Amino acid sequence: RKEVEQDPGPFNVPEGATVAFNCTYSNSASQSFFWYRQDCRKEPKLLMSVYSSGNEDGRFTAQLNRASQYISLLIRDSKLSDSATYLCVVDNSGGGADGLTFGKGTHLIIQP
Amino acid sequence: GAVVSQHPSWVICKSGTSVKIECRSLDFQATTMFWYRQFPKQSLMLMATSNEGSKATYEQGVEKDKFLINHASLTLSTLTVTSAHPEDSSFYICSASGLINEQFFGPGTRLTVL
Image (cartoon, rainbow over all chains, first blue to last red; front, side, top):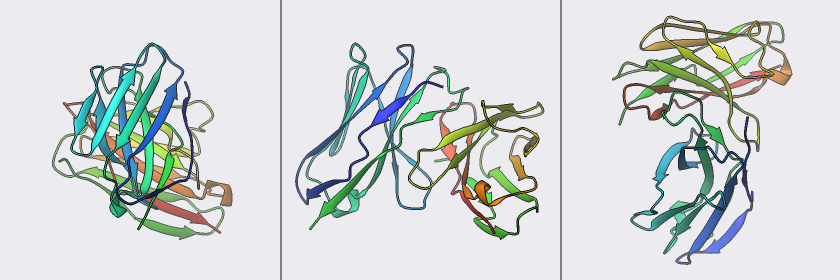
């Protein structure tokens, strides 16, 4: 199974700051990309899909660079509630018929 | 969004016993269900993929005779950890996928084998 690499952190960031994570993937044929959020001892929850043209959802912006095979997540005006582990996820099947490949996650701590 | 439940949410058992975990899609029909395992400070790792009515497809390194998966209906899949040992202690999460192909995750089952 192909690898998905993330910096595990932790990233300690003051409230209100902007923080960005990157994730690299090794399978150039990967079709779909996602960012999930996982709170301690909980199941992962889909944060946002990542589209080729880049996409934004409120304070969150995701970008995909196929040439360099990396995905990024930008969080603006960070809140205390953003503290969590952010998982970079790749779907290599293109149609959701295959299991997802998860990165190990980047641990984010927002400090008051 | 779609709801997936898992039962039990937490189980402690003695070494050598078998544990069954249920995964249910509550408001949609799941043609495919996935089982993942997550060890502490590790990423989720796919164990197997199951399609309703057919045998599960296991990932390399996952023993199919130890982790029995049954997907007998479009709303229920079960994972049975047979003859569990302490090294099987982990967080087991299922996900379900229906017509739209998005995976919806269950809340997970924390297994501790003494």
